[in-house]
Picture 1 (cartoon, rainbow, N blue to C red):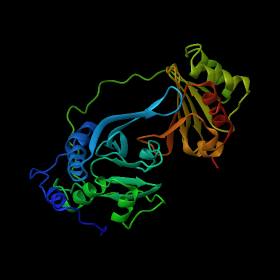
Picture 2 (cartoon, rainbow, N blue to C red):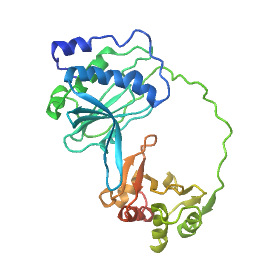
Picture 3 (cartoon, rainbow, N blue to C red):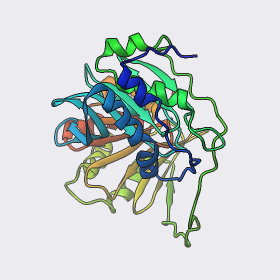
Picture 4 (cartoon, rainbow, N blue to C red):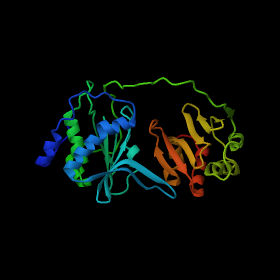
Length: 315
């Protein structure tokens, strides 16, 4: 059982309030998780701390780029907590909030059911908050609210003994069934793909589909100028994407050819092989596939830092 430190009398009254007697019926969208689970918990925490919430909190993330967290709990203009919301069924990872944090900020990534708190590089997980019958676990909700009401890092560390640095994942739990409506989709058309064993040939084919003068075109031009070649796998090119397929791993890198700003999906093993510190482009863990990261670049030096991705192989 996680250690729980009692707060003020008014805080305890808030923690004891009913979340609602009607069973929760999860829906698939992130907006549902925000409105039904995350915002009510945030509001309860604010009543304890006296702080305020600012929605879609945006901050600079390199030249000509900004990064927006779904909610910031602020003290004046200073962000104390940044909260990143995900769909109820979405798998979570501490890195999904870590990229938003600057020194002194505390972070949370949550799907409303599980809550990962990240402070000074250490994390603690609470949940599931929603039981299989759709009822809210009052004890889990209470400690989540109390943690979110902390105003300082020291207060957060004092509230919990279980902070850790190594990520073990979240064990699968039984949850209420997701409620879908109109789930069926229409027919899907697939773009014609060309397959290459040679990166240079693939890049020349891809250049026909990009707009000249964009950072996406710059990457392709630099790959050609460097005479870069993949060390395994193959490359697929369609009018929208260039995809390096790695043997045994699936996608190694995917370049969005329709984007003016360079938008790449890169396997984390390739990023680590190049060296994260050598990449000046923004790197953000992919929401759905935690083995991949989204890399975006607009400035020439940011684009150049991603060229070596195509010259390495996973370690």
